[in-house]
Structures are given as structure tokens and as C-alpha cells.
Length: 153
Image (cartoon, rainbow, N blue to C red; front, side, top):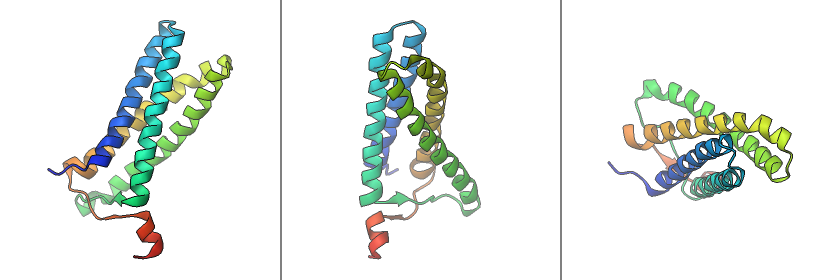
């Protein structure tokens, strides 16, 4: 099995981010506010590292098409769209939640934080599932970089 480095690295960082979110959630329940803050910032940085790897790979190398059986492609595509919507929502909620926490808008932060955490944990789980479907369970399909696609090379 040939598992590509960049997708593995980006998946590692999104899982790390979710682990940090889970730990941060436990820390705030235990009223360890400073530790919670540091853990959630670490979660955010892990997510940023994921995004930089993912975006760079997408632009320069490309995205990998589903290489599994044709009859499963529609189910994979629906799942992928669900994951993308979840990830986008989670990222927006994450930015807002962290911003409110850092600006001491704690009433708002407390209300949205648990929702953001749940979205982010599901984003990580579905991201791992996409990774497994593309690179572990099935052999990935064709990959074309965004630059090549735009320039028609």
C-alpha cells in the first residue's frame, strides 16, 4: 500500500486538532481556564497547519478522485459534500468562537463553544473517513493540480 505523505500529514494535523479540542473541552469543564485557552489555541494552530498543507497540495498537486468501485462513487460524493460543508461550517464557527474567547466575550463564547467543538470533532471523523476511502481502503483515482486544470496543461 502506497500512502502519500501530504494527505497523511494533513490528516494527522486535523486529528491532532480534534484531540486538542477534546482535551480543551475537558479542561474548561474542570475550570482550568488558562490550560483550556492554550489547548484551544494549539487546536487552532493544528487546524491552520492542516489547511496550509491541504491548500498547497490542492493548488500544486491536486485533489485525488475516488478510486473505488463505480457503484459507490455517488455515496462517496454525497459523503464528501457533507464533509466539506461540515468543515467549512466548523472553520467559520472556530474562528468566531476563538475570537470571542480571546476578546473576553465569554457569554457568547460559552454558548457557541460546545457547538463548535461538536462540529469540529465530526469534521475530523469524516475527514479521516475520506482519507481512508481515498488512500487506504481503495487506491486513489486520478490527481490533477488546480494550476494544470486552469491552464489546460
